[in-house]
Every structure is written in structure tokens, then in C-alpha cells.
Length: 140
Image (cartoon, rainbow, N blue to C red; front, side):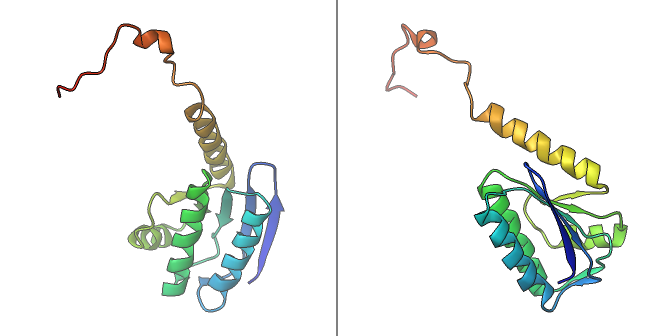
């Protein structure tokens, strides 16, 4: 798999230099992703501007890596401007896959996801005193 890695604190940027996400590429990509997860990275930005097709093994790997990212509150973002490739990716039915046209927008999406996770894990703005005098009822 021909690619370049750029590791940042919040994400890893992978520039995939393959015309097809097929053959041996998906297995190599999966190994790279698993290695990054072990290193503590949970958000991956994958530049697929050069990529024009995905085979069934590629589809499976994209779904798996997307699930792994989401499971750790991270994000998988695919960067491409190719409308035909975007249509192909959308037809693969990868749950909540993020497809954006530029690296900058992908980075923004990762930071927004991290902020949402931070705020979502915090205080829900309700204190015990908000429930004083409220009793549980057995009635629906």
C-alpha cells in the first residue's frame, strides 16, 4: 500500500496513493489502522483523492475501521472530491461515514467530534437538588 502518514495529537492523516482500494490494499490499510489504534489514535482522516474504486474486501475494511473509530469516540473521515467515488462510497451503506472534500474540513470535523464528546461526557446540568420533592411513581 502506497501511502503517507502524518500523526497529530488529535488524529492521523493518511494520504492513500492507490487508484483502487482493492486487492492487497485493504488488508495493509487494516493493519496500519490497527497499529494506530494501539498507539492511542482514534480518529483517522484518509485522503482518497486518487482512489476510484473499492472492492468487497475494501468495503468490509472501511466498515470495520469506521466501527473501530466510532467505538472509541473517534471519527473516520474520507477526503475526496470525486462525485462518482462519493456516490460509490455512499452506496456501500457504511454507517455514519464522513466524506468531505478537503483535508481542512476533515480536520474541523475531527475537532468538532472531540468537542462534542467532551461536552457530552460532562455534567448534564442537573443536580440532586433539582429532584428534591420528586418521588418515583409506579404509575406510567
